[in-house]
Image (cartoon, rainbow, N blue to C red; front, top):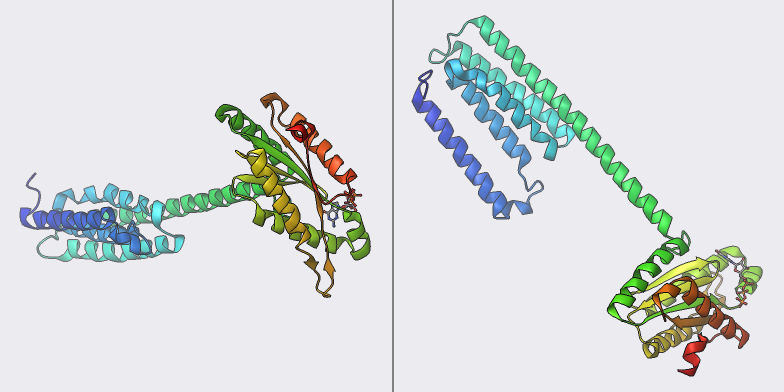
Amino acid sequence: AAGLTKAGPVHWLSLVSAAGLVVVYVLIRSGYSQRWEDPALTLFQISSSILCTAVAYVIMGAARGIVLPILAVILFFGMFGLTPRQMLAVLFYGSMVFGIALAIAQWSPEYGGQPLALTVAYMVMIIVVLISCTFLNLRVLAARKKRNELTQAVASEHERAIRDELTGLYNRRFMLEVMHIEGARAQRSQQPLLVAQLDLDHFKVINDTHGHAVGDQALCAFVRTVTECIRPTDTLARWGGEEFVLLMANTTVENGERLLERVRAAVQASPVVLASGAAIHLTVSVGAARLQAPQEMPVGLLRRADAALYAAKAQERNRVAWADDLIEA
Ligand SMILES: Nc1nc2c(ncn2[C@@H]2O[C@H](COP(=O)(O)OP(=O)(O)OP(=O)(O)O)[C@@H](O)[C@H]2O)c(=O)[nH]1
């Protein structure tokens, strides 16, 4: 429009560039590009944009200095989708394409003719833009990689903080948090909430007879058995040693009785078979209680479940006992 160069090639380049953008836009917005490895088509967009910019450099005559910031902008997009290796490939490709563009612009009869010193200055600036943007991108990519590693490390540290290492169940600390949340939810929704303490019977004998490793194996087998009996909305945690806590949200006492009886029977019916072929028979005693008032969560509720567990142990074990208030009910 400023009359600095021939309008025809500029119009053609604008048309081809715009058509390319439309094609990319349609491919991405339609979801068609999802089937490809890079759905954002970053590498394609960057390489074709560099090519268009290089052509622009050739045909724009006195206005060719405009391409330099555009080249930088194109390269910055590499930060969001390219790997360091691809970024270096882009640097190499950009140098090649602009090398050819500089040569054509200098020596072609149609577009050449600018002072050689100006071409050298452009060349230096293009090299500066290409190399500095690439290095900047590589640094940003490295920072992003570090941040991702950090995020993963934080996530795995969090997992370690809330899980029991042996069984993979939630640990006591996390379970107390869950109990607070579920207690508040039960109170607001007026839904019944049950808690049960499960304690393996005579576990010391297993350890003493077969060793600690077999004891560990038995604990894991017990957890598998119980997990198969409960619903996803129930939360099982290892309280410590051979003692576990099961939180049953939105569960009536009748349903809880059925569930805990099922757990007790499943544990009794699932002996742990050792590599030697020997089988260890496990039984579990369970003490259960229902949340009565939100303020008793978790200490009061656990205390009543614990008292029920004590009663179950006193009654020859391998049984489910309920807290006092529910015995009469
Ligand atoms: N293998 C193994 N044993 C554990 C672990 N934690 C606690 N124990 C053992 O569990 C046993 C618990 O023993 P007690 O508290 O006497 O209970 P019990 O023998 O199950 O008897 P009752 O509960 O009265 O039926 C001890 O021998 C502990 O060493 C563990 O992580 N792995």
